[in-house]
Every structure is written in C-alpha cells, then in structure tokens.
Amino acid sequence: MTIIVTGGAGFIGSNFIFHMLKKYRDYRIICLDKLTYAGNLSTLKDVMDNPHFRFVKADICDRNAVEKLFEEEKPNIVVNFAAESHVDRSIETPEIFLQTNIIGTAVLMDTCRKYGIQRYHQVSTDEVYGDLPLDRPDLFFTETTPLHTSSPYSSSKAGADLLVLAYYRTYGLPVTISRCSNNYGPYHFPEKLIPLMIANALNDKPLPVYGEGINVRDWLYVEDHCKAIDLIIHNGNVGEVYNVGGHNEMRNIDIVKLICKELGKSESLITFVKDRKGHDMRYAIDPTKIHQELGWLPETKFQDGIKKTIRWYLENRQWWEEIVSGEYRNYYEKMYGNR
Ligand code: NAD
Ligand code: TYD
Image (cartoon, rainbow, N blue to C red; front, side, top):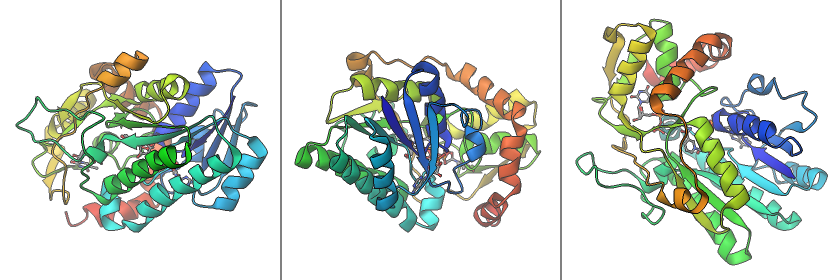
C-alpha cells in the first residue's frame, strides 16, 4: 500500500505520518509538502531515514510536480492535509487560501482521476458549518448541518469539500471527507491558541485572549484525529462525510487559565485584546456517525492530553523556539502589535 500524505510537514499531517509508519510497517508513506511557513522539515527528522518513507517538496497546485510524483509512486491512497490553516491569516490575505485550499484540492483530484486511485481523502474542518450560539448547548454539528461559513479560511475549506463531493458524483472518484474539531498536541504551530499560550507563558509574555475569551471550541487530541482518518480511509464508505470530535467543549479563557495553572504562571499575564473579525462563537461536533459506523471513540481525555502537550513543549523547546525567534516574529508584531 502506498499513501501520499500532502501537508505532512505540518501539525496534523506529521502526527498522521508517525501513526501510519508505526502501525503499518509494510506501507510506503510519501509526504508531499511545499514547506510554507507552517511546514517544518525538522518535524519529520525521526522518519527521514525510514526506508518506507519519502519526502518530496512540492506545491499541490503544481500540476506537473503532482503528476510526476503519481507517475513515480502509483499511490493507492491520497490523504490531503495540505492547506493554509490559520483563520487570522485568512482575514489578512484570503487569496492564498483559495489557491491552496481549493485549486490545490482540484489539482490533486484531477491527478487521482488521471492515474486511478483507491481512495482520495479530504481532511476538512468543523468550521465549514459556521458557528453555534452559546445559549443553545443542545445544538451540535451533524454531517447534514448546512455549510454556513464565517471566515475566508472556512469558506475555502467548504469550497474544497463541495468540489470533492462533485468529483464523486460527476466522475465517480472514490472520495471521503472528515470534518474534525480543533486539534491540539505535539508539533502544533505556535500561532494557534494552545501552543501560542504555552510558548508565551513560558517566556513570561502577555497571553492575548480575543474579546472576552468566552468563545467555545471542541478540543480533540491530535492522535485521536489521526486514528479516525486511518479508520475512514480503510473502512469508511465512499462518498461519505464523517464528523470527528470528542465532546470536549471549552471556553478559550478557561484553556488559558488551565495552561497558567499547569505551568505555575500568574493569570495576570492574561491580556484581553481586540476581538477577531467575524469570530465564531461555538463549535461542537456530533460524532455519532463515525462512532456507530466505524467504532471510533476518542481515547485521550483533555485533562491528560493537555498535560502531555505541555510536557512536549517543555521537552522540545528548540522546535518551537526556532519558530518564534525567526520570521514568525514579524507576523507576531503585525498581528498583535496594535491589538
Ligand atoms: P498546518 O498549517 O500545521 O500545516 C499545513 C501543512 O501544509 C504545512 O506543512 C504546509 O507547508 C503545507 N502546505 C501549505 N500549502 C501547501 C501547498 N500549496 N502545497 C503543499 N503543501 C502545502 O495545518 P494543520 O493544523 O496540520 O491542518 C492540516 C489540515 O487539517 C488542514 O487541511 C486543516 O484545514 C485541517 N484541520 C485542522 C484542524 C486543527 O485544529 N489544526 C482541525 C480540523 C481540520
Ligand atoms: P485558533 O487556534 O486560531 O483556532 P480556530 O480559530 O481555527 O478555532 O483559535 C482558537 C480560539 O482561540 C479562537 O476562538 C480564537 C482564540 N484565540 C485567542 O483568543 N487568542 C489568540 O492569540 C489566538 C491565536 C486565538
């Protein structure tokens, strides 16, 4: 079995590669990644010498490069993680999100059609459903909830999802889609809430909470997401969407306070800053379908997962310190300087 994993030098894609290489010793895993600001080759250093692994630097929008790789590797499965993934960046510069997230998805699927494929899996997000009101805790996103996006990021992901379903209906391409809630864990880029707060707290820097910090996200440990995708590509039904989430809703402010507590830092570091434009209030996944059809259940409780994650950031300072001391500093100044 040969699997192309696009975006495998990023947060979730790298964790997926580690999971697959460990579990399926005879699979060949090829990572195709453009190495944007979010992709880190150092993340993959432990698997670079693995004879079952190959890394290829390429853009999923580059049709020639993608076709060349398919020609060489004849993959059975493609799992597409490659994306521009940060909502705040999408508010600043939407175009690259449309390019990578929509056009890139089309190029990958065209190539799958040309060379034939057992499965094309699209890694999507619960953000395609928009948000839920805070005063209706009885409501959850199901796979039939209408797409109703808020940000350029989520709109580009929804556009890609629609295209994936269109390739299934029009061309019969064997596709599946997973829509997961917020992930956390090792190798999470420190521009996202949890790693940013851990890194800032460790450096005794202000902890910038948007608005009042009452927005709710449904957090899932990254390994549980990887296991869900593993199940879907092997046992999921073609043409289907699967929601992935662990019923773990938390307010941002409570996460930040928990990180302060775990690190022994004062809550006085918390700084309320200007809210994100169009800020989604609450995400909450109903994972009944993937549980009933594929037997998936999250295994890591948030209390354990957050401790493991904090320990990882403490033990792997070099990984994130290189990021926060490089080009990322300009981003941070631009986004948070006048907030
Ligand atoms: P990430 O930003 O950490 O990594 C994205 C990776 O894609 C990077 O390695 C980057 O170099 C690569 N990439 C970007 N543009 C590319 C291009 N044009 N060609 C090839 N590679 C390119 O993202 P992540 O958090 O790991 O998210 C992975 C996927 O999962 C995304 O599709 C995202 O929408 C989805 N998702 C993320 C979350 C989350 O909480 N992080 C939740 C649900 C779904
Ligand atoms: P983020 O990690 O960017 O994920 P997403 O917006 O895709 O859910 O943000 C998670 C939540 O944390 C979101 O409600 C915005 C908020 N947030 C802050 O309050 N401060 C920050 O510096 C960041 C990056 C996010």
